[in-house]
Length: 114
Image (cartoon, rainbow, N blue to C red; front, side, top):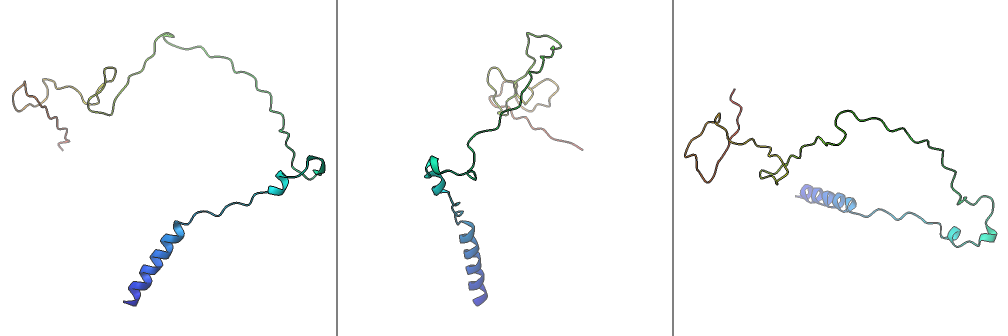
């Protein structure tokens, strides 16, 4: 019985330590309130170093049709919108069918027969 209580208390302590918030980092309030005339040479500089010069890269020529975009929108939803292709192919004559052709619901089962 004592083992169970000690184990339960140990789990509770580990849980409470894991849920504890991180300690606050110390801030330097004295440097923010310092008089600008009294700042010495050891104070951090607020000036940023100059940025390096960047030369623009030349544009490359496009191959193929420049005016046409070649992309296809595919939906992961079973019923795609008007501009999307379905990820499930439509029922064709090659599919095995059981039941009437004008059924209200069509169930397509994909399987790997090995």
